Amino acid sequence: MSVPSTAAELIDHILARFHETHRRELPGIVALARELEGKGAMPTLADDLDVMAKALEMHMFKEEMRLFPMMEQGGNALIVHLIDDMQAEHLDHADVVAELERRMADLGAPAGTEPDVAALRSAFSKLFDDLAQHVQLEETVLFPMFEARPAS
Image 1 (cartoon, rainbow, N blue to C red):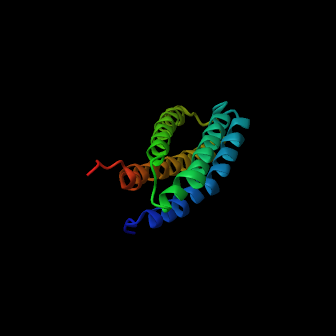
Image 2: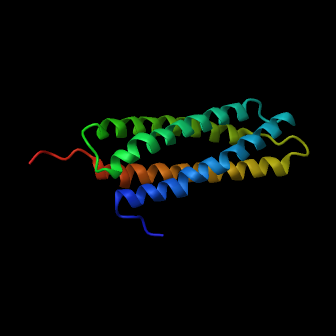
């Protein structure tokens, strides 16, 4: 699929491809991590993933309720500050993802949990790849559409 060329089309794509996907997939990933914790695998992983999921939900909510509507109306002077806030949150999310990736790499598979651990690793990999694509699209295509332009 080609990248949409207008802000409104791009926002619709981000909502459908990424926001809806994250909301659909994250509860199952957290549930699988909780199930594995119950079997003796990586304690607190599910709690930490749940914290990340809630932070991501809040981030998407801010985009959907404030930033994206402002962009669809053409932007204004405040938009640069909202974009800065979203970019700061992207950096925070990247730090959390890096830590979760490190922990997943260290995750052992207690006897009998190997298929579930493999499924969790696969789900994490897809989630983190989706997050990277999501952020890259916003940072390199959508946000630059609204960067401050020098006065004429």
